Image (tube, rainbow, N blue to C red):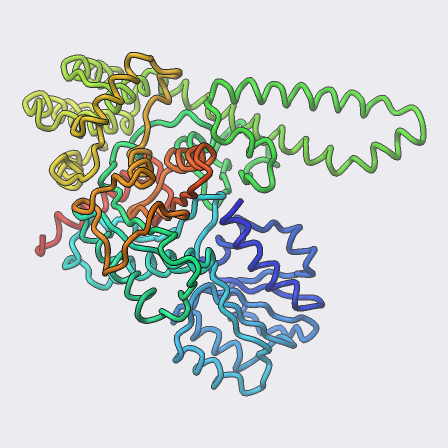
Length: 567
């Protein structure tokens, strides 16, 4: 629970040290940061009786002198200006100000000048400027995520904002971990280089005193890489629980919105999937769909047994025991209903979109070579009217990424077929993907066919066979982690920033993917950590992708590049 506990500890300290009834004031970003680690009941235990957003607090004139205000905000210029107005006309007895990252001297001065009525009791920096969605996985939820695919000249302010947010988030993670890392980046990515260099400038020059954790120098590593080095992972259908929910339905800050689905019970239309609050989810989040079904059946059977025993109340003692266990009974009932609703909905989508058929071909495109058979399989699925437009597009993209050099004529046939069979297909999108993330742009050995060691590993895997045809794909990040642990990450591909060198194997490694992470990669990181106790990997990115979000970002970058005169 490493990242989750770090953020929870900050929130605990923030609320515990201020006695009495409190109102918690958040901005849209800190709402997400807090909600993934803290529940409503946790807040009530800390005597927080009201939660407001900055905008609501700005529009309200109601005096609440009986409450103490705890503000938890990102240190943005906009938030400081709003806070200035709040302090000019204070509604609360006391103001305790906590910021999720480093405050500038000028911002502190503005706040001091605004506190004419001396209601501010404290101003502190608590470094939680990221969403800790799992123990080793964090996201920054950057809105304009498509920016990483565009040259800086297209939108300099947009690129500046994107890079600044990435640097802030990365810095906050290392301040929370109390580490100053050696920094490396992917050589072929301008945006990864920019973020790595600006992070180094912040840590080693502008705020070097803040990052001076002497005992841990050289024991940690930051590696900044680009999503376009592995465009395959976000294009694949997923078959493990957490990744599958995000791919087929969508998860945002650990919440799943089921309001648009017909057969979902009313009390389950927005559910939380949290490894902190839900024991069943924690135990099954990385399980494949088949095993998950068996485990849900076992949970339902256990609950039915519990329900039957609750009907057999024969004495006052039995009743007292049932009443004392009732909250746990209600919680179990809610959990069973939630997981059954999710799995039922996903089963319906899998059947409706013929995803088992589609996914088998996707996995073969990602994991095995054989151009002629692949072309035949993709063509057959493009002709199948049961296959949805988004699945057709993903299949052609996966084929194009693998065989762009081998079969240009057949690739053109697939482009034409896709255009004629999918009304929504925007012409040129697959070609734009190849321009962004084709073989000439990539650093890593995506298909395991460049490096002798990877070729041998793939042959061994092929001879052994695979346990499950739907989960045989391994994200490129697995190779990257192995390269770091074994000291095989080449300096020419992943240069160091500045003159800071790694002394031996790092203990803590943050891999930041510009353009976004996936839950499949987060699973690989968690499993790798469990199997290799000597090193801790953390995965972070600008957003958490599913194929829909990846294609939306690609489409937006394509649209802008077509209309821009600077490209």
